[in-house]
Length: 333
Image (cartoon, rainbow, N blue to C red; front, side, top):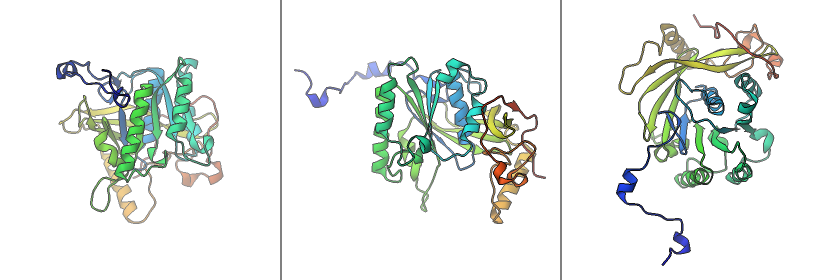
């Protein structure tokens, strides 16, 4: 007899068959598994969005990410926060794209696409189904940040479970890899809340943390099938845009420690340590602090911080060529 309709999608295998299954596929070699859910977590101002934008550009173009091979494909980047300089970020990241690469990097800004409600799984399914037979069918979806997607309560275990089921449904139907950009959080009793409720149920968790004036670190907290505990230190630089404004872009890897190894001297210079101490001191004294001057903003050329530029001069960049600054960020003495 055949299986009942309720069980028609259920299959069982011998443990030997399961033991001989192929090794997992990688979206980013030995760092991010393919066709699974990855959390990219970090506190506000940790440069998560700049990091994940560079990752998206590498997947679309097929070039390595931080020295690691990637699986090239079409990326759907969901910009879900109200980031006033998103056009400047896209301008910098796509300046060296050819036409084919540009077609493999698509984005949606929810404030423009759906100004009166949040994007839903139903919206995503309709979009992906419409593209499934396209040569550029979506292979990776990035939610930035995930807290602004859907109406579920991430602090509710039942809602978090429902969200995971929906995400896994997208993976099974469309063979996509999913990256959730999230803010970690703990409640008053040091228990996980918010996106941390998803920690135990996803394949990979990467933590992004500020590691200096123009550096951040990426630590692997969880990786099914890959190494855990390694730390990558990445450096950012300011890019001058055609209209005279600036934005930030990830420049590359400057230090790396394998799991269990001590941090490399390249991870934090003495100046960086001094900067972080001053930043913490300023915060305890009630001064507003950010990760660096210029980070996360478009500032006219010649201005070192927002304080040096009239508010009305801080604007979006227009399309055009970009160039790197040799000395991207001023230091505090």
